[in-house]
Length: 85
Image (cartoon, rainbow, N blue to C red; front, top):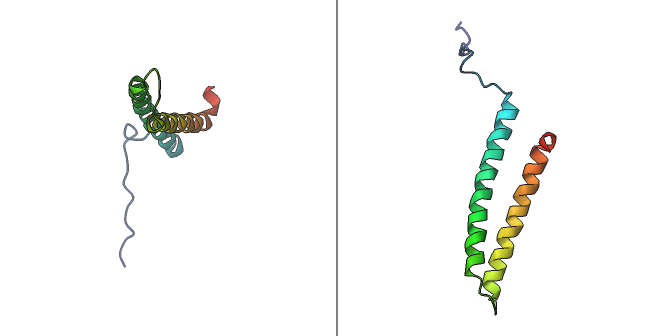
């Protein structure tokens, strides 16, 4: 008979300071915040392209889509971090 495979032992310094779920949630929040930063830059760029008069529908639709996505991400972050409000 063969011995069962041994589980690797980790030094305490290697272990995550949070339970696995918390570390995963922190990573998700960081990714969403990065995407929010990029969206804010895109929204600013689209707003700079808006003319003072006679706004073209495609530009306005792009702006509205970006703002909708931003609102969705803010809602997700709010649901992930309810205790920090």
